[in-house]
Amino acid sequence: MMFANLSEVAPHIEAGRIRVLAVATRQRVGSLAQVPTVSEVGVPGLESASWFGMVAPAATTKEIIKRINTAVVSSLQAPALRAHLLAQSLYVVGDRPEQFAAFIRSETAKYAQVLSAINITAD
Image (cartoon, rainbow, N blue to C red; front, side):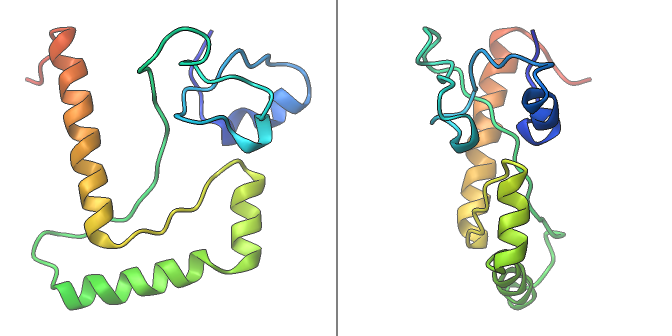
C-alpha cells in the first residue's frame, strides 16, 4: 500500500501494475471516476492532495506579484498546456495570490494539527 501522486503512477495504473483502491482527494478524480475516495470507503476526513504553487520573498511588492500572477494564470489558460497537465491528472487552479495564501495557511494549520496529534516536533 502507498500514497502516491497520480501523475507519477498513472502509467503503472494504465499498464495494470498498480491497483488503485481509493483516492485521497475530496472528490473522485476524473481519470479514475470509478475509484472511490478514502472517505467513501470508510475513512472520513482523510484527505491529502499534492499541489504546486509559486511563492515570492516577503518583501516583493504587490505590483510585481500581480504582474507575475497575471502572466502565470494567463499561461495556465493556454489550451495546449492545460491539455498536457490534465493528461497527467493535474488540475489547474490559477488563483489570485490572496486565495493561494489562504490555502497555504489552511494546509499549514491542518498538518500542524496532525503533527501535534502524533507528537512530532521540529528541532
